[in-house]
Structures are given as C-alpha cells and as structure tokens.
Image (cartoon, rainbow, N blue to C red; front, side):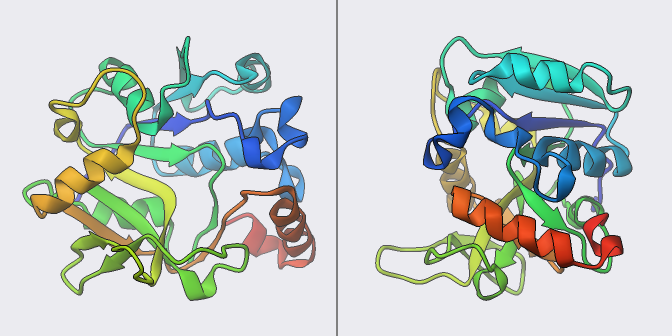
Length: 245
C-alpha cells in the first residue's frame, strides 16, 4: 500500500555543532535563527502543518536552552529523549523508538532548513511512501542547486526511486537534506550506544529498501558560521511568502 500519514516524528537536536564554534559554545545549533526564526521551530512548524501530533526531541548539548525555548509551544506535543552521552543519529533514534510507535515516522535533523516547492516536502514524502518496498525514504536535493553546499554529494537516485550511496572517488548528484521517513523495522538488530544512521541506510540499500525523492524546493546546508550568514542574507531579501513556505 502506498502513502502514509505519520503522526509522530523525531527531531534530532543533540549535536554539538562543532564546525560552528564559537557560536555553538553558548547556544545549540538548532536555535540559530536565520530570517528571525530558529531552525528548530521552522522544522516543528513544518511537522505541525503535515499533521504530526507528537515530536520526540533528543537533547544533549545545551539541551536546557531547547527545553526553555519550546516550553510554551502547544502543538505538536513535545517529548524529550535526554542523552547521557551523545548517541549520534542512529543511536539517538534507537533510544527514542519506544516513544515513536510501530508506524512509519518522520525524522528531521534539528539544523535542517528547507523551503517547500510546489507542494510541501513532508506531504510529498508521505505520498511517496510504499511500505512493501521501503524501510527508509530520504528527501534528496540536487547538489547543483544547493548554494551553501560544497561537497561531492551523498547518493545517486534511480528513476525507480532506489538510492545508492556514492562510491569512493565518485561524485554524486544528490545530497541528503536531513529529512526522511523511517519504519521501525529498519532498526531491527541495531547496535547499542552511539552510531550513525548511515549504517542502517547501507543495510537498507543492500536489501533494495532504501529509496528517495528529489526535493523540488530550496535547501540550505548550515555547517559553518559563514554559511549561516549567507542564508541570513538570502532570507532577508527573499520573497516573504517564500520564506514562510
């Protein structure tokens, strides 16, 4: 059966943001606010618009600031997964699985910033989901249209939607946006402690159960203070309606 309507989501907000020091020595990266609204709250806004009712936010670095910022938010409902050690993306989601239920759920990096295209990206992901063929569905963005990205890409995307990781010395046309739908079965046999979701993506790809869709809007990697400044300037002069997308 194709399509799903995730009601729960995980927002990854525990990282230390080391590449953005000294800014992140006193503020968690997801609270950076290009255009006047924090990355964290922008993602929560998009999740709320997509019909998500509960979001689990993991915390480690300066997590109390995130809790304080979200204390007055009414929707979606916020639950916290406090990590005694930094568990990385895979370990963080694995720890929160009891709070995420048995159905497919969104996972969004707390520092993701995307603008929707013709249709909301989260709705496009939900419509493209096929539980018979997929354990993970990633939102991918063309590297050629990522103004703050300078890498060699992450994945190749087949016409069928199947995703293959870039091989060594290969350039890939798509970069992962940090926005996705995952099924709990992806985590069967997952290790304990810290590990990256990349390990599970590779396992799903081997089983031909890793898929992706192309993002048709805008996406920005915010990995440095310089990139944050570029995005700030872009949003300042962009069409206000586009900024709200």
